[in-house]
Length: 95
Image (cartoon, rainbow, N blue to C red; front, side, top):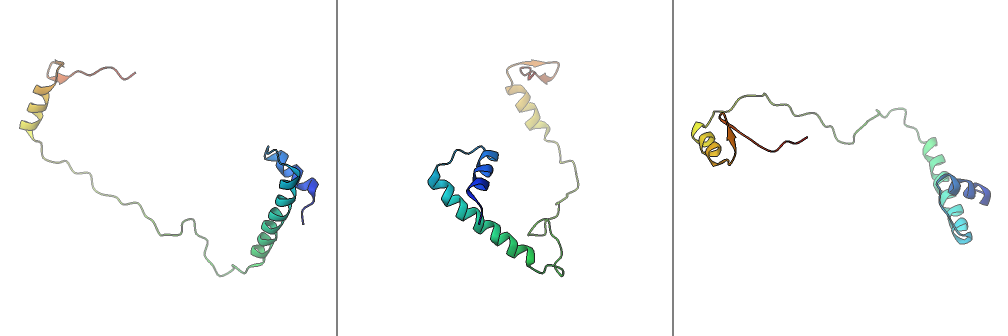
């Protein structure tokens, strides 16, 4: 079991202000977590492949193909713009 001094040291590292009651509580809880970690260290994982993700995920890639141009729609949208210059729509500067 962790000592009170170790719990105080951990709380200082985590910058947590804890009361005396919380020290006792964390002393038990942190000790049980560390005990469980020791059990996990003893588990035989020699025949298990390491993974970085629980589900096999691959990038979905599609070809970049141009779509047909709708000249009529483009003209209607340009005509609806308030501010135009030399065939282009003017917008406010971003930067």
